[in-house]
Length: 421
Ligand code: AMP
Ligand code: GLY
Figure (cartoon, rainbow, N blue to C red):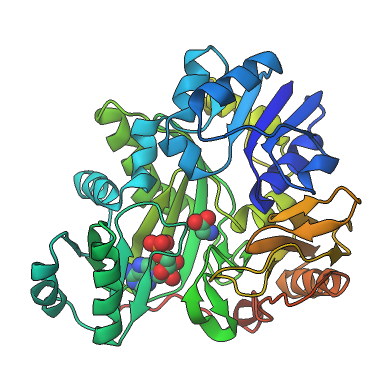
């Protein structure tokens, strides 16, 4: 099987490494890729937001399967175009990708499906903002109703800060979503979905804030681990039943069935699981941890999902133990990152590339905010954490920063689902 992966992050590097282990895979290509994906796949520098360009590449390269990593091409209809050309594609069409592309659409689907999510209100007129804020209590949750790469959300107890963020979004022409605050630990559940068929992967947790102890602004994700030692072993099945399957059925009922990876971001509150967001693709950086543990060959799984065979796949096989990934970010991230700095140690095992490129002189240099994702595995979460941070010591990038507490509270047994009184 010849597989073309679209994207250029550490998520795509992890997907490619997992595909490379599948004995059914004969060739891999990546568009546009980075310095790390270049060591596993042919690189093709095309505009991945152009449905015609991706379809032309898939045809010319004779892809048997196209896997689309990021949300932006999915929302732009790239999967529709590839499928229309008769090429199997892992990823939803534009209609179904709206579950991520529009938070208002996602809320509407959840309401129809009877799935719990934070109460919310959409504000599109600055004149209505203050009255709307008055209908919420601190902490305030202020979101951009559109794609914002995880960075459009401000959670704050400071009403002035919440108001200022909302005004910035409104001034930029973006409707604002105000949401009730959800307490309880977060979990990310990735599910392979084809119509009403839902197969969950291992639950994971990611770390959105830039600083240790969840301080500083939200980012695209600074680290992750899987599975969740503090959760019930039945968590994935429970979440499928309560959340993902009803949403998958609702999408079918609307005539826009979802196919690909449906990612539920949840808070496990005292009142039960409540959805924070849906994404229409693998999450980054959770994928780097989850796929490190997957033993079922990935290409077969994604191909089955893309071609109506998901109901027939055997139960997934997982390695024992745990995986932890720690993101190395460039100086300045999540603001404007400093680019072009040489990186050493980036070719080591367990070092996945995101914002990297190879210069003409062969040096690997930073080319994005999130630069690397270092992955460790071990017999338990503590061992996986040690492994990740040991590998990270071998990596050097001037000015870079990373969190030192990924998975730490879970290792210490400090995370639990609050119980109802
Ligand atoms: P989102 O882009 O919607 O995933 O939000 C990014 C992050 O903001 C989430 O991972 C949470 O940490 C936080 N967040 C978003 N919505 C809420 C909420 N309603 N209550 C508490 N935290 C939230
Ligand atoms: N891990 C967060 C995201 O992929 O959106």
